[in-house]
Length: 155
Figure 1 (spheres, one colour):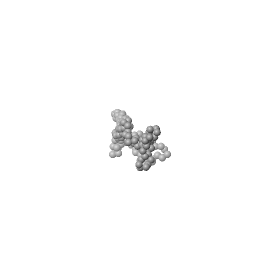
Figure 2 (tube, rainbow, N blue to C red):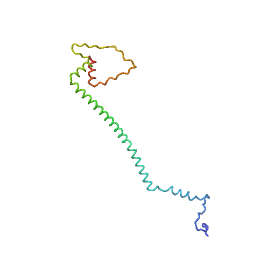
Figure 3 (spheres, helix red, strand yellow):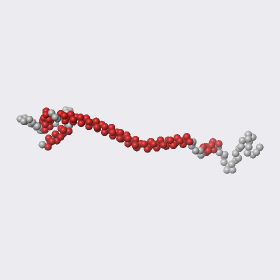
């Protein structure tokens, strides 16, 4: 038998000259796997993941801009609906101004006009109602009534 062989015929490592113990087979296998390159499948998955992350990051700004524009559009549509309602009310008010009785009522109420022979009395210094009574809300005046009251303030 030769000096490096056993009876089974397997080769035995020769003792190292450094005197240290021989590395364990698992440790040697671990060193070999560290040097291995990742498989093609792993590389493809990593590239795909990087592309998806880049896509999400690059589309975030335009997506937020789109959502903001969509919200502004909804606000603008609500304003258009409100203006259409106001326009309808003003159109009805204008059609009512063609009648003489309506004009007389507005002149009497807003401008303190009187028919010939009538007397107009203005009451000043009327105290405010007590706080315990709920105040009645005056109906909102339309633009024509606002203009008439403005002219009234001039005279």
